[in-house]
Length: 118
Image 1 (cartoon, rainbow, N blue to C red):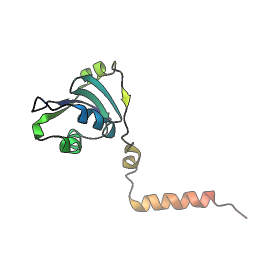
Image 2 (image 1 turned 180 degrees about the vertical axis):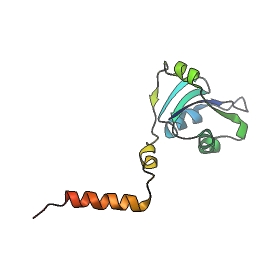
Image 3 (image 1 turned 90 degrees about the vertical axis):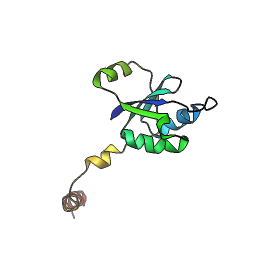
Image 4 (image 1 turned 90 degrees about the horizontal axis):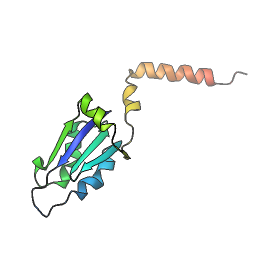
């Protein structure tokens, strides 16, 4: 999981940052508001995926900046009060990168073991 700094800079004075605040739970496992228009986000998504998912909220692509935090910055972010996001854990599926034949053989072996003997 990576930690990002997300910064929204409105291009017009009447534009608010509420749309980004409302959308963060859907792209983050955890998120933390830092200041008006600035958040920490913990997610499995890449910076580009975050930008693509939030792009619909902006008139200009440069309104949103997403930066991955360094380890030193993550240590500072660890002291922040984090809110739970709604992004589903996609890692377990990605960690099962076995060839289909190996997976089929494993399933067959497990069903043979689980089958009651008469």
